[in-house]
Image 1 (cartoon, helix red, strand yellow):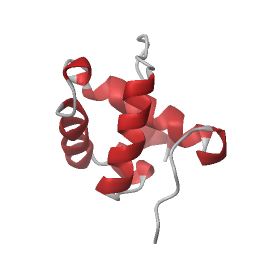
Image 2 (tube, helix red, strand yellow):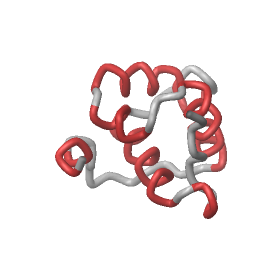
Image 3 (cartoon, one colour):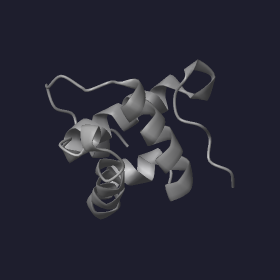
Image 4 (cartoon, rainbow, N blue to C red):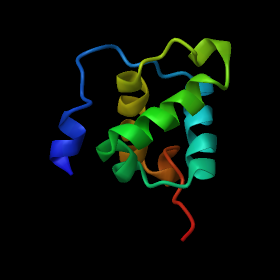
Length: 89
């Protein structure tokens, strides 16, 4: 997995707002694709990012790298600490 993650890690400030975090969590569950799979598949990631950007004006200017980086941070954080919820199988 580390090779997949390496392609999206950028040295930029990550927009971390309650709006972005809640949108990522909600759409992640609705999209129903594991975060690791999203981060390794450019086409699935692009579709997911388009979905995120389409939810509000505030998020419309975010790049794929910014969204992917925050998604990775939330995945690492884990649900018990406010990160991404586990997907139901």
